[in-house]
Image 1 (cartoon, rainbow, N blue to C red):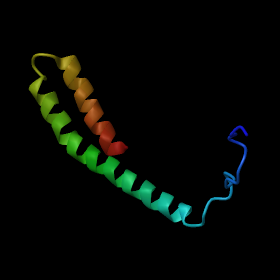
Image 2 (cartoon, rainbow, N blue to C red):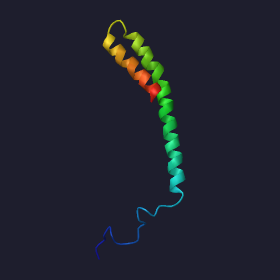
Image 3 (cartoon, rainbow, N blue to C red):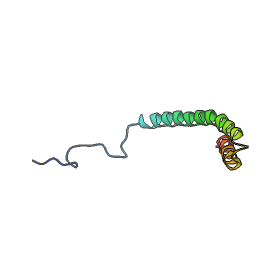
Length: 74
Protein backbone atom coordinates (compact mmCIF):
# COMPACT_ATOMS: atom_id res chain seq x y z
CA UNK A 1 0.00 0.00 0.00
CA UNK A 2 1.55 3.31 -1.04
CA UNK A 3 1.28 6.42 1.11
CA UNK A 4 -0.30 9.43 -0.43
CA UNK A 5 -0.62 13.00 0.69
CA UNK A 6 -4.29 12.84 -0.26
CA UNK A 7 -5.00 9.78 1.89
CA UNK A 8 -6.15 10.24 5.45
CA UNK A 9 -8.23 12.97 7.00
CA UNK A 10 -6.81 16.45 7.09
CA UNK A 11 -8.62 19.64 7.98
CA UNK A 12 -9.45 21.83 5.04
CA UNK A 13 -7.74 25.20 4.70
CA UNK A 14 -10.99 27.06 5.42
CA UNK A 15 -11.84 24.94 8.45
CA UNK A 16 -9.43 26.57 10.89
CA UNK A 17 -10.24 26.72 14.56
CA UNK A 18 -11.97 29.76 15.94
CA UNK A 19 -8.90 30.42 18.14
CA UNK A 20 -6.73 31.10 15.08
CA UNK A 21 -8.18 34.55 14.46
CA UNK A 22 -7.51 35.99 17.96
CA UNK A 23 -4.03 34.47 17.94
CA UNK A 24 -3.35 35.99 14.52
CA UNK A 25 -4.65 39.37 15.71
CA UNK A 26 -2.42 39.26 18.77
CA UNK A 27 0.58 38.25 16.68
CA UNK A 28 -0.09 41.11 14.25
CA UNK A 29 -0.36 43.59 17.14
CA UNK A 30 2.94 42.36 18.59
CA UNK A 31 4.58 42.64 15.18
CA UNK A 32 3.32 46.22 14.67
CA UNK A 33 4.62 47.14 18.14
CA UNK A 34 8.05 45.69 17.35
CA UNK A 35 8.20 47.57 14.04
CA UNK A 36 7.35 50.86 15.80
CA UNK A 37 9.90 50.13 18.51
CA UNK A 38 12.59 49.43 15.92
CA UNK A 39 11.75 52.63 14.04
CA UNK A 40 11.89 54.65 17.26
CA UNK A 41 15.33 53.25 18.02
CA UNK A 42 16.66 53.66 14.48
CA UNK A 43 15.50 57.23 13.89
CA UNK A 44 17.88 58.99 16.33
CA UNK A 45 20.80 56.90 15.10
CA UNK A 46 20.06 57.83 11.48
CA UNK A 47 19.95 61.50 12.45
CA UNK A 48 23.24 61.15 14.33
CA UNK A 49 24.88 59.56 11.30
CA UNK A 50 23.43 62.29 9.10
CA UNK A 51 25.10 64.96 11.25
CA UNK A 52 28.34 62.99 11.26
CA UNK A 53 28.50 62.89 7.46
CA UNK A 54 27.09 66.37 6.78
CA UNK A 55 30.49 67.90 5.93
CA UNK A 56 32.26 64.95 4.32
CA UNK A 57 29.41 63.40 2.32
CA UNK A 58 26.39 65.71 1.98
CA UNK A 59 24.53 63.35 -0.35
CA UNK A 60 24.71 60.52 2.17
CA UNK A 61 23.75 62.93 4.93
CA UNK A 62 20.59 63.93 3.01
CA UNK A 63 19.68 60.27 2.41
CA UNK A 64 20.12 59.41 6.07
CA UNK A 65 18.03 62.40 7.13
CA UNK A 66 15.30 61.48 4.65
CA UNK A 67 15.29 57.89 5.94
CA UNK A 68 14.98 59.13 9.53
CA UNK A 69 12.07 61.39 8.64
CA UNK A 70 10.33 58.64 6.69
CA UNK A 71 10.37 56.51 9.86
CA UNK A 72 8.35 59.19 11.62
CA UNK A 73 5.76 59.29 8.85
CA UNK A 74 5.58 55.49 8.64
